[in-house]
Length: 233
Ligand code: ADP
Ligand code: ADP
Image 1 (spheres, rainbow, N blue to C red):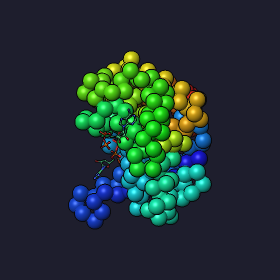
Image 2: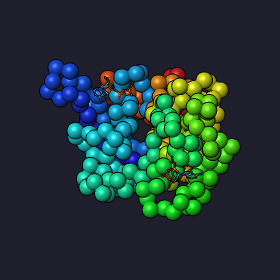
Image 3: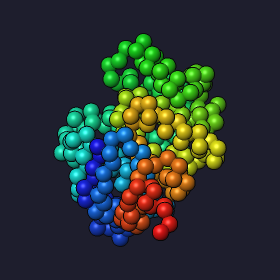
Image 4: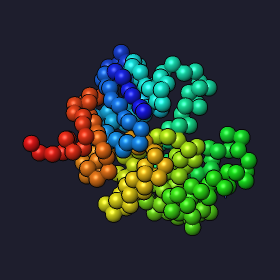
């Protein structure tokens, strides 16, 4: 379970460009849920979700993941806890000078895993996201949807329990968006993966999420099941 309690994050504190990106936000994501964070650009969605793995460190509040408050962990324990949380991005963030296999296996090099075990794991991941035939090509040779599949495989390399998706389909056309959402749904079912999806597109939330929060100006202004949020009274 993920639970954020009274999380705040301000950029440029005590300067004339101070931005209160997240204000006192609290929410809970149950295990195995596909959870949406929706709102306009600049609402604070990305900052809020980055607080889940402390990619962005809150100024205040608690961040509970799998029973531990990450805010209280030292560097070593935090590094360990972060392996349980994968993240994918709008623009994929792949290394252009590395092959698909190298992009996916990169983080495993630092875990003491043998070269053979890394190769085996990378093959499993390629199979899981359906791009085995792209193993040895470079990112520039891939479509957007294929690049995001590499991003997903890389994020899953360390077998995380949670996948954070930061506008992961925003650079994709509608058809490719649907295929990536279908893959996320499969991974959720197959692996029991908990998924948190940031998006500015209602349709993404409607088609895949079970519940969601709506953000505006750094605050959570609505929350509930997707059925409750989108049913017209
Ligand atoms: P969203 O994901 O909803 O588009 P963000 O979390 O990216 O929103 O941004 C929320 C606010 O915080 C925006 O006003 C943005 O400009 C500001 N912000 C985000 N990151 C930084 C940063 N590193 N430094 C300063 N301001 C930032
Ligand atoms: P180096 O061996 O100098 O670290 P390489 O360019 O040979 O650099 O490869 C980078 C890393 O990517 C390798 O060490 C290996 O861990 C990983 N890697 C390369 N090819 C594969 C592959 N086919 N499957 C899985 N991991 C791979």
